[in-house]
Length: 261
Image (cartoon, rainbow, N blue to C red; front, side, top):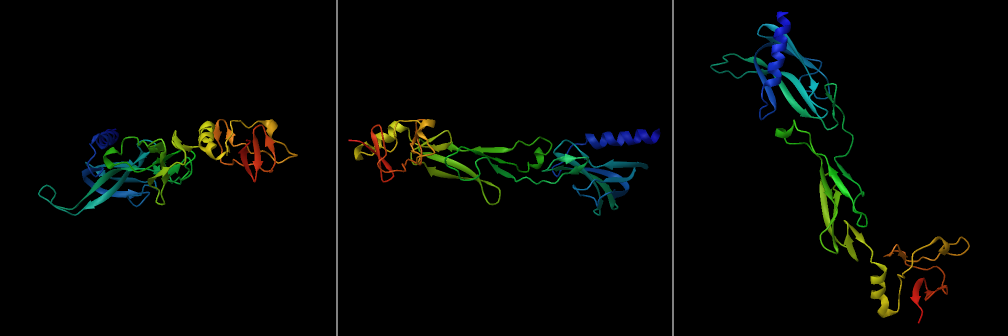
């Protein structure tokens, strides 16, 4: 009974001591402190320490503080002496460890995911994306749940795009890109059909016509007509496939649509 009370008392002391700048909990007067199950500090292997505290046996097991933080116990030998401690002594140390792959059953799990993830997979100027960065928190924040950093593609001006991507060493990086037409909602966008037509009007070329692609414009028996105006935006494939083909006020000549005079 006395032994159980002392063990409980030691556990309360172990939990209540404040964390230091080095994230260590130090206990003096620990005799015959021994590492068991691992070689001391080994977050990937579950272990425990045992010894004597106030001439009573005790044991402290590695355990998960939460799903991200492991409390790792180890024994260390202190050779430095002082007036208070004239002889070398062994101490029990508890260290908080942030587990990148999560903590389970007193062990840090392997971390296989990349530190940097990009939703649009690199320098994709025509698609809005974001990158998510997982990085180690500062030691003084180790007991707080870490919030990933997120960087989202954005428009710096009506034509300038800031595109985020993951660098070779898994760190965030960005470039400023000048969109050919306009920047909107974090991506380069094609011109609206009416605006594109106005630009080409002086040369009598109206590549982007105010039509929307419909099912009846596509045929398996004839080459499809590549109408470049789709959902009121200019598509990149503004071409036609058969010279001499006519539609309303346009004629296909050498693979391009020309307005009829």
